[in-house]
Image (spheres, helix red, strand yellow):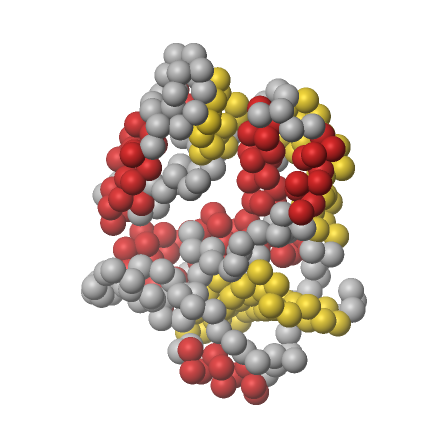
Length: 293
């Protein structure tokens, strides 16, 4: 089950095994600052049952792992051994919509894993999930079958359209990434899948407070694209904040082409200019049906 740090609801849980994928600053409308967020993660980790296991991303704040109770096993994970984790992947390949890799960890090595949900971040997530499976006794053969069978969830690297050839692809993909680190991981993965292809991104910032707090990070990650189209901020539970608009991000983006457009303008422009190699929708409140053939 998901342990959600938003509104501290994960502090109702007392797990036997816990995975912490990230302690990056987020939900600052709830926490106020990153220190308060990290302290909440420390409380969560402190609630792991005696004899349990914490599987934590090597990029997480070090104090979080230190909060694990005595007797709780701590396993750090990451994408490569150079990063120093006990659990890592190597032989990572990107082909078609599939990422292949080998898992190396405290429970042993599993070669030739094939993940049909692409993305380096998804390889990281699968490392942690597979480690839990190993803890509960799944064999390498069972892991290979399970990883290959996983098809992800809606609006997470969801391919809407895939046509054309390897030399001239036409790819339309939707992902709910709404944090700078998520966006960077997603776009780097698309670049690995379709090297040298023109990448157009449509992004809707989510929350005024998140836009205010992370505008430079959003701009840096979105600048990995060739063209960026921003929509107006989705306010969700928030009221507007003076001076906080999508222009705050747009002004710092260094991509060759950039603009702010309404949903209606995006739909109209898609009819006028339907030519693209790779089109990615990111963070949209609701997906857009561009009616592309």
